[in-house]
Image 1 (cartoon, helix red, strand yellow):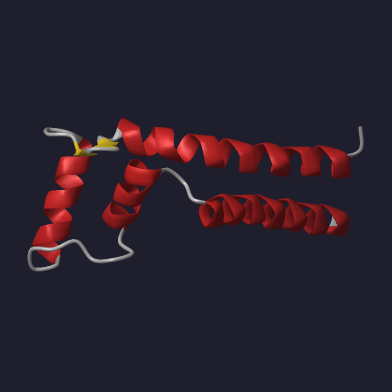
Image 2: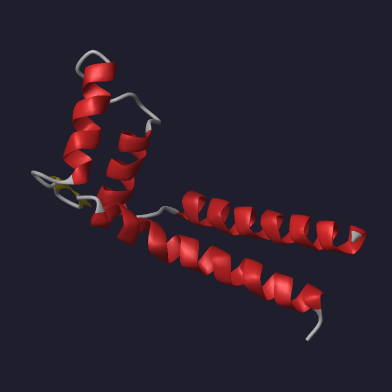
Length: 100
């Protein structure tokens, strides 16, 4: 199998893993569909975020994004972004490899 096919396959696999792994990773730190679990890593993240932002969580912050993923999963836009990121990474790897 050529390196081009291997790279394309790796990029596709990376996109699939990213889409599946993100909700699992968020859940593993304590962000659930019903909120942030008491005593979890997410609790500490939320505490730090609110202290840094005067009592609220800033829109677009890591905590806000994790809460969104925990509550609703990855939307179509996030899935497309993960796939595009993997494709760009694969393309960069191919371009780099062709220069060697």
